[in-house]
Image (cartoon, rainbow, N blue to C red; front, side):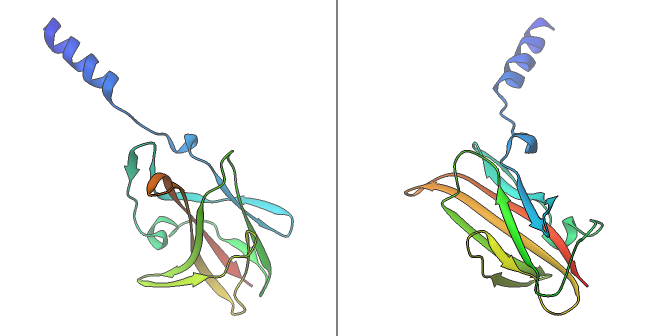
Length: 141
């Protein structure tokens, strides 16, 4: 019995987990108000977590209400800025790259709900130190 307990404790001590609270957080800023994003799929500190599609993940999320053509800023917390950033609008299997300039994008003109995936990665040459997708939904009114 003692051997099994020691083995279990040893294995538990060797496991490596990363909490989403430990990851850099991203926020959407619209009209001076700050909104949290949800963390999607990520690899961080040798731990990878695969989540459902952004559409599914945000199915019941409260959308950020924006005006047609309104600017949205995306702000990423953390000491090290990512080396690569991209934003895409997701609608099922249809994915469209969205222009992002100086951390800012523009809401669509047409009314409706839109789901976005903001992906940041931290690289040093060919070595990846982390890759995180942040997802959020807006509603253009």
